[in-house]
Length: 103
Image 1 (tube, rainbow, N blue to C red):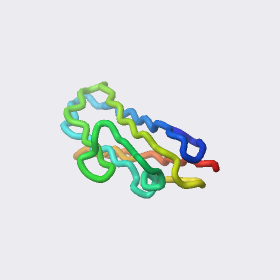
Image 2 (tube, one colour):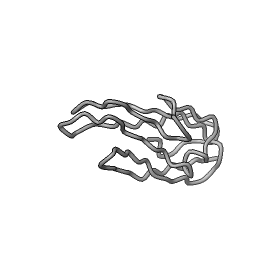
Image 3 (cartoon, rainbow, N blue to C red):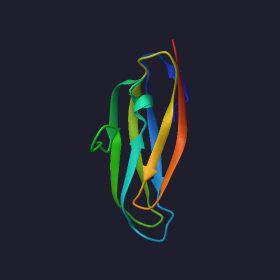
């Protein structure tokens, strides 16, 4: 992920979700922290979120990886932090994220 970049610069946030279980995951909900994402403008997420900053990945097969990307435009100076969380019906995983936007 972009750990630092300049004001009004566009950077990509790439998140890879991998199913390491031996079974198909019918839905993995990938949530991008609102507190983090709203610090940027013109955010474009692929695949498109079903609701605010939540992307559903459907039928993820064992050992399959899926990519979610977000284009971030540095709108506000400073350090921006949040969490990325992947959730299934029976499990979840999360990781912290922090980006510094310089003037």
